[in-house]
Amino acid sequence: MTTGLGIANANVKIVSSDYNLQTTTDASGNFNFPSVFTDNYNVIASKWGYETSCANQTINSVTGSITIQLSKGYYDDFSTDLGWTAASTVTSGAWERGVPLGTFNNCIPANPGLDDTTDCSNMAFVTGNTGVTASDQDVDGGSTMLSSPIFNLSTYIDPIINYSRWFYNAGGTGTPNDSLNIYLNNGSTTVLVETVTGSSLLNSTWVQKSLKVSDFISPTTTMKVIVRTADITPGHIVEAGFDKFYVVEGPAGINEHLSQNNSSVNVYPNPFTNEIAVTYELKNKLTVDASIIITDITGKKVLSYALTQIKGTVNINPTLNNGIYFVRIINGDEVIMPVKILKMK
Image 1 (spheres, rainbow, N blue to C red):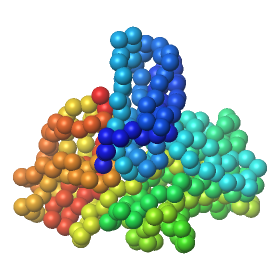
Image 2: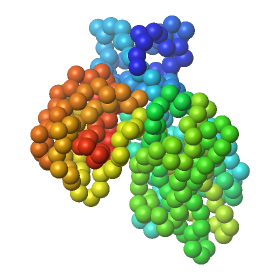
Image 3: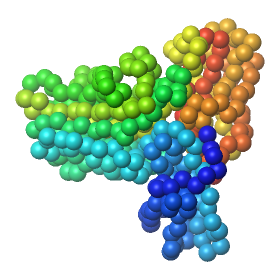
């Protein structure tokens, strides 16, 4: 949802290969960079409670004012500081926001060398983001906990939280016994929604997760995400990461069967500037209302395209503002997990 009103205290950041400038908007939603060198910039605007805007912009001596629109929603790829906090008892390896600096243990990635590259920025929250070897600045001597700002899910019908996480646990003495735990808090209750251990599948990679909030806790006006990891006795190498958090509206009222091995969807190019191609294959018989649905980050439907065959490729040239959207296919009670896309200039 957009209102056309200025947004105060929003973060605005322009980044090129040589320059990195940041500011905040004033009470009327205006911002100003007094001196900017000619270059091709990534222009990022963000505020907690809004969808981040991320677009390419050439800025030179003839560039006029730039207007950026933000839609209501919850999204954070950590390109700017939106107020997540860390509390730790560790001697090293506390959560910190930055460009990940990769380390390896026996040729296996311990600390990530990149963020989740499907988002806007190159930043994420990682544990102990310094050092050369895997044992440098990994989590040691206690626990470290990352907490989100409070967010309101009471206006959603069927909220789904999404995030990418990284975990590595190896080395040391005996079988690794540490974990990465992710919790949801609704102001009165805290519940565990995911535990990752050293034996979990796909460790040492960014893993994208989508969780239906009501499966775990009642959504309220005072929600919070908590991400905790620790190194317990005996010590092992522990590294964790967290990136690309966002909330979307789920398909409320639908008997949802998310895509299995026989259903798939792929969207490319991503990011895109004009046209996208949606390649898909369904597992069920085509229904009369089968369609490709594009929604914004709040779950609001912005475009819909009817499907006429069970598999194929559909080329779409959607008229969309720059920003983050989701492509999903609905075929009766068959709903394929949404694919996040980024519209850029």
